[in-house]
Length: 173
Image (cartoon, rainbow, N blue to C red):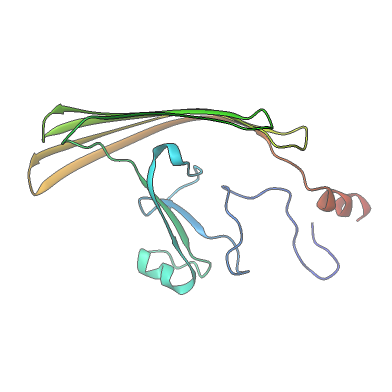
């Protein structure tokens, strides 16, 4: 929807990104590879936000910047397990599990992460249901070399909140 002063209004964001510095949407990446899958904390260890022209240093020529998330890595040194649950007053529920298991100590490890989420807000009707599973394996045959592989399966069903202001402009236009 375009208003009389040529400002563009959208009813939803693309890939969960927002405008950065008024220049458009930043480039979403996972481990510095462009992606269409929205980032989530259940399978991410670190988030990096690079604004403006500095994004070219990360291989993205986008003047709006870069938003990168680093996947969790399988750790060959020690096992690690966690379970997280969240609930809120809008009847949202979220559960995630993270399992890291060395198979051959200091050589081979497997890490699994899972998410089941049903997010809601006070405005209805809206929902965002996700079921995700993430697996990564690391092979470290020598101290100076390692190989990693990742896979993720995402099932998502959503009905985002529609901004009433944008809907009113669309109806009257």
